[in-house]
Image (cartoon, rainbow over all chains, first blue to last red; front, top):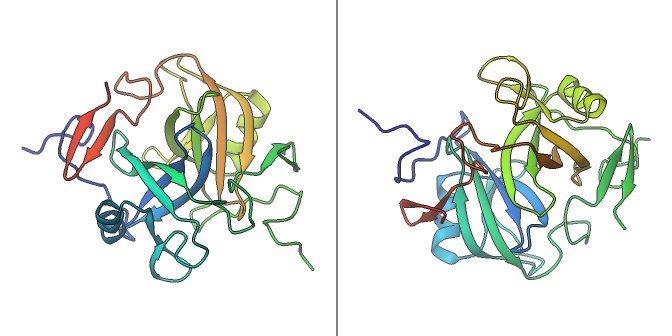
Length: 119
Length: 119
């Protein structure tokens, strides 16, 4: 009998139909930087290199964050959630995490149906 | 011509084929509590009530976090990411966020193929 994913101490990601889990990246101070996806290959590459690597759904290929910009995310710690379908990547960012140049992709607050830039 | 999602100040969530966006919940100190999903109805309910409400994929219905346990998540601020397919819910939790009783669903660190409980 398999131990449930929420109590086991064996890594057993619950990949979805597309072979992906959600990967949430924060810095070590708890600022949410970005949300992306990893497949098994991306997770293995992240663990082997110590730099966050994702599966790009739009490009259909492995994507090391910062591979062109240089703004890599150096992994401090990886955690996984109770049902093992989401990863928490705690990382030291080498530069802005967002393709817009913002420190974080979450640079707008929601106010009703409007968005307000974070100061 | 529509302004791109990454620069507009209009809320325009990029719901996926299932009508969902990813919702990442942290407390106001930056601890990652849980990851879930919202559809348009869940987002509207969250905004109207000030308590985080999600779409439960497993139950196929709207799910206010804490509706049975009492461990609601009082929303402090909502943010959205560059391409508007992920929400950041900053919340004050009324109790443990995880169904296991843990403060956060991310109570295990990944160490190779093993998991280690967070002290």
